[in-house]
Image (cartoon, rainbow, N blue to C red; front, side, top):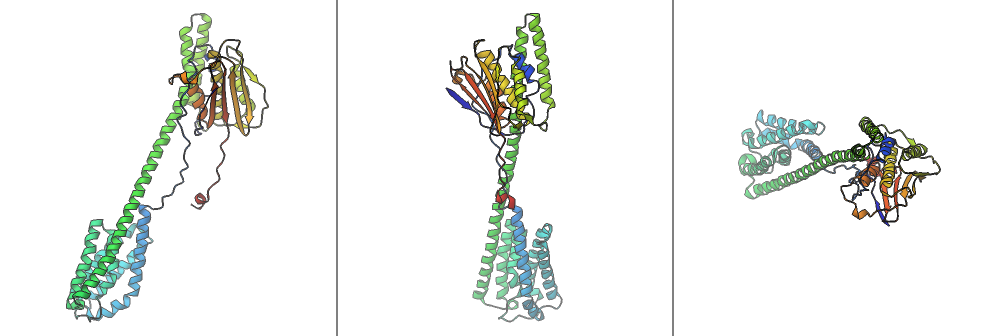
Length: 451
């Protein structure tokens, strides 16, 4: 015994194949269709759950840097204000306070930018430039040399200026700025207006400033690049996923169209080609009308047309369709059950069952073959079995280009999250089992709820 099964695919294909299936199926039983074909498997996989939140993004990094710089600037500005006021007597009475007030105003603007992100870069650039102006113009603002025990007040804000440059400037500009500030400060410390601290003390202060500012710059560059990579990877993943969804939708439609073509159009054309009597021509004309109605129904139905169908209605639909076949097919009595199916599922099961019965009539043997269809409730879903005790076939010998089982049965059922299994062997008959169960609702995760 050879068994084959197709995994369930995704839902949402709409009603495409059920309307008019009885007429088309009855017509197809009188025409020579191709033997049962069998593919390697449904081409779809289950859609992954996409509830992923990126842990680091470019926007989040910039936001964090803006807040950190705002806290540092405002905090150091408040703490070091007494030191700045203590040095004002040594400075020009106009330019000294003006430079200090301008730099303090830039610190306030940086603090405001933590709450107004759109001005963050402007505030950072302005802060960095004003600090560089305060540092380089220090000799011009000093009227009397400061004591050697004191440091020029811009020293206390070197880190703020370098951090603002790292945040607001491009990497190469920030690198030049980070190297320039310690160098300028060392030169100032060696002059009388900068306290004449001596070479060793000046170099120690400069190296300290360079190391701290360089560390801030390196951290900023590394985090920004990492965040940019995450953003790029995420946008690429979303773009590929959108493409996969579109390709999947096209594949679902292709399966439906192939099934309709096999069920209605090909059998109609074959019957018309073989019609040599008035009765055969009348039958071919009726089949053509049924095929046109079938195609029109497929074009008119939409994915929202999913009215529930009872098991009794499904059984009646299948029974009416197989009753018009050229050979008798018995509908096995079974309890009705209370399950209700979406219309798209009922259409797919009815059309697939009819195609399986048509294949049996055409290929399983003559009137001596017993054929049956069983429709019954299976747990919360439906189980449909179409079988015969005819000649059977070897699945491995069926050419891959045949559409009968692969398109009209297996992929049609798989497209509505169902499952189709073919059990057959030469001389042992054939059983085709179609099953469908409602999807199990997944419990919301704690992470998803928190997000």
